[in-house]
Length: 146
Picture (cartoon, rainbow, N blue to C red):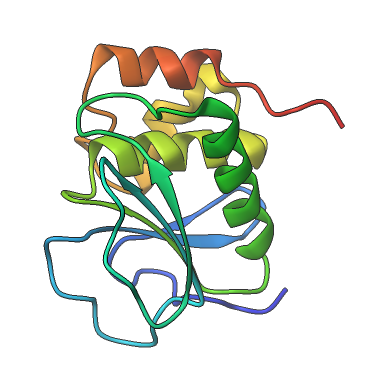
C-alpha cells in the first residue's frame, strides 16, 4: 500500500486496514506538508473552491447530513481513495461532523459500530462526535451490502 500521509502528522488517523485519513478544521490554516488529493467537506453551505478534487456533503453544524445516501457515498469514496491517495475529511471546527464521518469510515474499514466513536476519540480527537444524535447516527450506521 502506498503511504499517503505521514503517521503522526496533525489530524492523521490510522484505520485498522492501515489506510491513513486526515481530519481537520477548516477555520484553521492548512497543515504543513503536501496538500490533500481528495477532500470531503461537511458544511451547511457549499465550501470555497480548493486546488484538489473535493466533494461537498450538505451537513449543517451540530446536525446530521441532509442527504444520508449522499453522505454514505462520500464516506465510501473517501475510504476507497484513502488506500492510495491523501484524503481529508473536514468541517468548520474539525470535531463533530468530521469525527462522525471518520467514525462511519472506520466502520467501513471494519470497526464495529458500537466501538467506532471510541476508536475515533482514541485515534483522532478525544472530544469528537459531539452530540447525542451524532453518536446515534454512528451506532446505527451500516456499510451497504456487497
